[in-house]
Image (cartoon, rainbow, N blue to C red):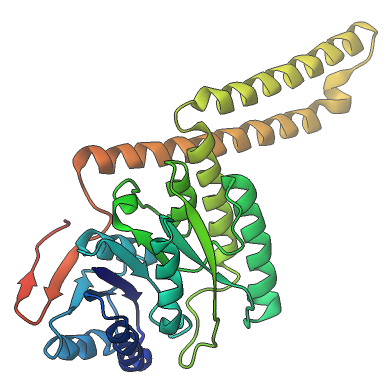
Length: 323
């Protein structure tokens, strides 16, 4: 069975065309399937349209979140609910071509655990999307050790058992292949078509660059130092101690030769030391906070989303609180 998971947020114009194209492709494959739309608290008529579609298709399910939790949380909700042995995720804005789904599934049938889409010929704006994306993908590949050209696309196919080992937080959905490869998953890259968004505006822009950079730092820490944090912090501590000791020794020798160091170099020395220490403390605090957050969620068995309701053809389920 194949599960299609689609997170949406205010995609009213795209829903009906996407549903029609999806069902056409999936029916042609002659395999059992389900389609799961996860409505991330849309404020337009997206949920209303999906609720109407549910009444006509028993293979369609709509999960409505209580508030806008973000794409990673929406995907996580869909993954948790999916029943298929293979799960395909894609965006709901028609920039992903449903006709590419068979190509992804063929890689899974060849024995790979993840088939990751590659927008080989991107048609986005060069300044705001293409160039930043290439830089980010290069950094992601170096940080994760996984040689992929396109980490950012949601269009991927997964073996369901692979996703059970992955816990998603923040905006780390783009790093699922890297996180899975750390557990031995086999990852293949499949060229996919990239089409212009027919309606509305993209939810992403240059403002996401800093968040991507933070995610790259996080994933590097998780993949390289999760079980051995002393390798990172110990090295930083030794370097800091060595540089600090060398500076203090130099200033001591400079002082005993009769020079005045406080008046000549005092303010700059203090400012530089404070900036260095503050930067290291903030960086370390961020990584430790990341680990504490994960420990909290996983020890409590909590999810990063809360469901308002689930719509299927047979029933409507109202859910209180987080799953």
